[in-house]
Image 1 (cartoon, helix red, strand yellow):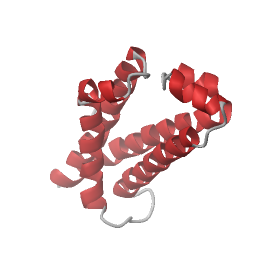
Image 2 (cartoon, one colour):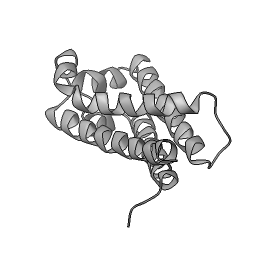
Image 3 (cartoon, helix red, strand yellow):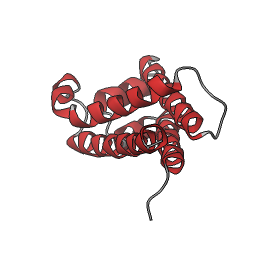
Image 4 (cartoon, helix red, strand yellow):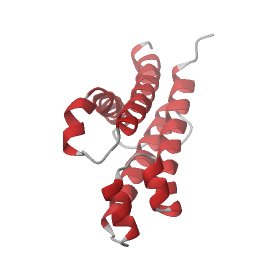
Length: 143
């Protein structure tokens, strides 16, 4: 049974929320979690040294992911209308899919991140981007 655009956007929002929570878990649980998630030894050591940058970067990513979840929920009609939803949701799809496909180009910029990190995170981005895209397509383009 195929799901509706509304259901797909709800799933997409839930997946974005889960990704945001995973980032917050790194902050709360510390360097071992950064290592487990594949963020690299440099990032984990910066956390151990009580540097602020890893926390700020991770908080920024979590904030973006929570915002994207909000837009998915808005597009699904679960929460009130957010500004520019019809422009932002397709852009979110493009960013997720772009991140999934561009990892070979990004990988040299972050040599500390493990191969597992790149494959798993890119696969997750691909799935989330496809779910969002499916929801947007059904919700707005099939009407």
